[in-house]
Length: 253
Image 1 (cartoon, rainbow, N blue to C red):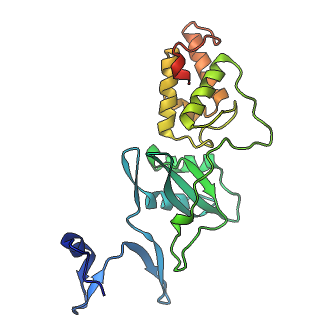
Image 2: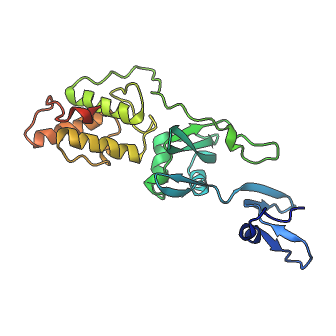
């Protein structure tokens, strides 16, 4: 029997409550969420205080998990953080699909974006056959391995960027995403990109060509090829050609 937290009376008072039945025993608040079935069995659902700090925001991962479970094709979901770059935790969603068609990453991102702010959208989505659990039936978050952030394999190799604009953008993407190279048709979000990295790429492109290129450009043009078309169109409107190299060489690296 525990008497409370060692030399921490405030925490003890918050977690150890008087027995509502009036006995001398105390009730300990574990921080777990559960439900009782009609036949009296108590089922553990999840921790209620699972929070993470991402990009300066305090994020409730349970809210993201619950939202994911409402998406068609998703059976269960768990969200945790992984630090691929030291000091920059990213949200990663692990999910199991129903027997129906598995939802695409684009569909998952779009569905979450309808109700959640962009900083709560996971940077990566990993499909699992089953969510790992501990011997006592709780979600085993420690056994959820970090996703592969390498350039994804394709059945047909995507050609590398060729024009001046494409080459410069590919270099920017690779630098920001921490990849060796980025192909012309690689999807920004499938490479692990998030809204913060989209803003960084947009800022570099803006500085490189002295154009106004908002971060939302990558939402509508999530490949190097499609983003390059946006940049070329903007260059044309300003009276410059698409073969004009970036004015700031450092911005393209």
